[in-house]
Image 1 (tube, each protein chain N blue to C red):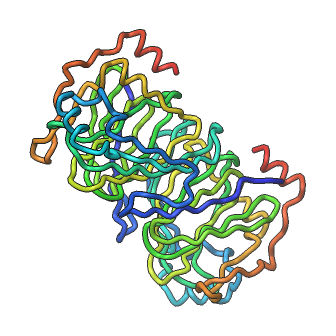
Image 2: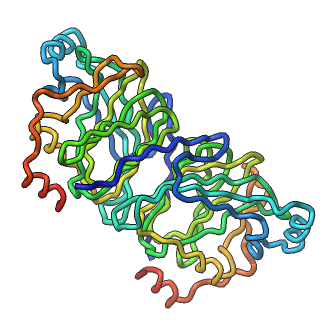
Length: 206
Length: 206
């Protein structure tokens, strides 16, 4: 009988990394073109910088089988494009009824969530906050602090990621800007295109 | 469209607890009768104490649906019965191909794992160690330190727990005793009854 061998990974909270990862990727500012409201500020930030890393991810993927689990770590740099905080690209799961669990390790941030029919939810996260993103919620992380925002995550191995859903609606319904009593505030995304009933139904059966 | 609402739980590492849990249970020493090698030491420990809590668990269970996730926190007290460290009852998943992820938060301990055909694996855990318990591995946690051993965990919502598999083999093949260069050592469990080929095959198809 050949079984998959147990594994151990050590998280380095300060570095936002994890030993033993089977995969890693990073997103630099230029990879995130079109995601921010203020395109002039985006171009200025790009031209005044060396295309900085906005976030990086390391994960452990034992398999893609239904019933298995993937886990990993995300580290997000602090920063603003105009008044809008650095964010991840965001996704819904390709198998849309798959949830995800995020566990804050360092820094300050938000889990910004949107239902297919355009309801917004926000969970404020700091070290030791666990956020449960239920099935069918589009989700994106935002660093609202001034230091690295680090989270460990886990999701079903057969979830997949659909990044196109946010692009098709010209972004999520809300943006996260500087301001407000906790340092952040939501603003309507003027470009947002609500999903049609057919598009919502397609998500709910995917 | 009614979706399950996002949730946030705050972990208190020092207390080994989590806010927002939907369920909690605890195991006291008397609940663990028969698990330890030294029955006289067990009875003495019981009679000299007020039936202490050996471990407690708080979890968040959004559903039991395939594809969903359960998460929670385990806090284990430090202690010895004779030379044997405090342990959890241990289980294999009722749906045996479901994995589990444990994330060390405080203290020192082990994840003791056994394959259906009797191979043992050990992962040493401390704060920020993530242990991936792959499909089909029986697993039990052991506090090898002198302080609370705390872990956060996540597993597929349809996994279930089969505690009987350990009872049927009169325990796991190895016990964890005081000693060794890292403070612990494995010892053969003299009562251990290896599983039959038929029993192994039954696990591998469950």
